[in-house]
Image (cartoon, rainbow, N blue to C red):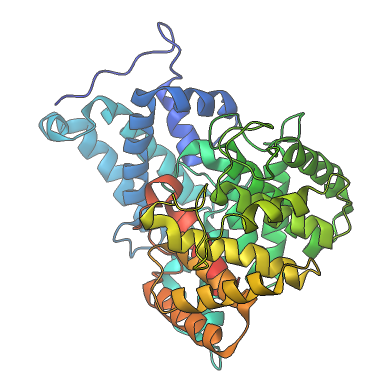
Length: 437
């Protein structure tokens, strides 16, 4: 089936194709990135275009490149000429209407290869993929992962979600995950400095109400993860200038809590909460309280009480109401719920002794299984770390070994069920967070 020709900015609301490509490349000067992201959420044609651009850019960036930049520039220039002269080949190309834009993409990438260190191709090629002398496997994986994230970071401080295979509307959450991964990598120095720069870019995505990101039915994922990232940056860098943004973010979190205590896809008192969205808000509220933010509305206690009511007699958590959790999500939801409640105990927020024992038994039972994806690995690792006994330590080590085996040139490929949503930022950041929860 042939794709329809792209609508032009003159006769429709679609942005120019050059602007879409610029967004993919992270070149936001001269375009209105927020308007484009809002448009992408509504326009399947432009989302398809972005997907096509990502494919070409990813091929050029990750192809079998062994030459230095000067040789690479000659190859790209040659490819521009080939594309321009081979119309028959273009007719067979799956994104034929965008061929002239791919020529533009190649030219832009030629400029990048010649004039900047964004790709850092030679550094990545020459980097030793093996451990440094005396380095532990986990430390080596964390170091390579943090380096990969820093190599992908844009000059403005953030990461281009679209270029790295994620959905643009999740820009705050994915940038937040990258920030958290750098801050928690244990590498200090350059990763912390890179994360601090990224926080500055993330703050530009906070609106006047304190919410991170645009309004849509999964907006609280963006907000919860971004708030956690800024709080962690405050904790580890001591940047007092972050306090006003944190104040606003926490106010929005509390204002969107349902009257039952949790958070869901919609916001407000009558929203239907779920465990996944609620867990991220709990983590940010818990860290805020640890760092001295006063919770005058008891939002955290109410949220923990809501989570504790999602546990059935076997110690398994439900997504929304006890007994109706989807079978394929119950293990991940259980591990995240157990982590929230066990971490509360570590932060001097008591839970009933019988509930704690039930949670520990449930975590031990599930630890015999292998996490199904990167997000599950993070939830498992977090719960196991909060359990802190011999069995959980051994189970956590198995997860770490599995993740280290899957690392490729510093990154983790987005080959699980959430990879199409989060792309390479999600898979790499979640893996790093699972290695050191």
